Image 1 (cartoon, helix red, strand yellow):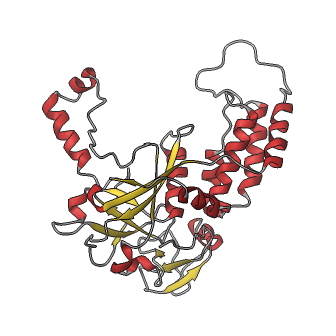
Image 2 (image 1 turned 180 degrees about the horizontal axis):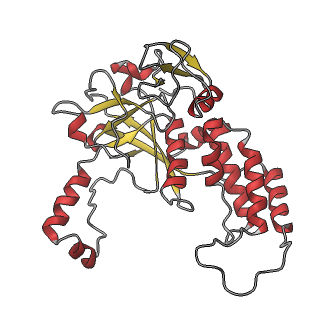
Length: 324
């Protein structure tokens, strides 16, 4: 079962101080995070501990236990075979690294902790948002990402109720802390990606078939691609190159091509929801080693993930189903 995809949908708010519930748009949320807006019930702003936060919409189909295994779930990763069936986190460690970690016993304990971590799946919007966050926060700019569509084993047992986002600061969750014996999946309210949506923490055995495509797809607005590539090729240095050595600690000035690319990306970002614009611009940063045409196609592909998700889903429909 596919859910409607809407990055710009309204969000539900719940005040931790007065229990007021209300619905806001993303513009309100953006102003709220800048302490411009306040709770309409008690007047608190985002600066207090009990400040209102996004909460799940009461009609979210994932609130129904029976729907969880019927819904499509999504994940983005740089792994081309996620989730790896025989996951061995220590497989690529060099002998030098093993020694630095304290030897084989310490490596084995570390690997067991890695295998104990929960996997995460969520809405299509959350998966795309996760990719942008990783590009911006985790040095994944230039990495090849894959979008996975996931179906769950029909007989899974879902933990009752929902949790508030249980991830630590790096997004890790220990599975057996959320899913005691006999429980396969735990729902949680996602604060970081697609805020207000429900995501799942689960183990590999809860996942049935998956489908995968490389993202972003190549942009198909050939007119914009051609125009943008031409503008980048025309960008020229407007000042003479500096002489002598660069002072320590001072960054080199961006190239004229990078500056023009940033302007073009900022113009495209205006079409996107306000909460995604700055991460989109980070993902669309121009690398001076790129060809202008390559950059333009990549950026238009990014845009299509938000503005034309039906084409992305149609591409997934054509992909082979992989059973774990």
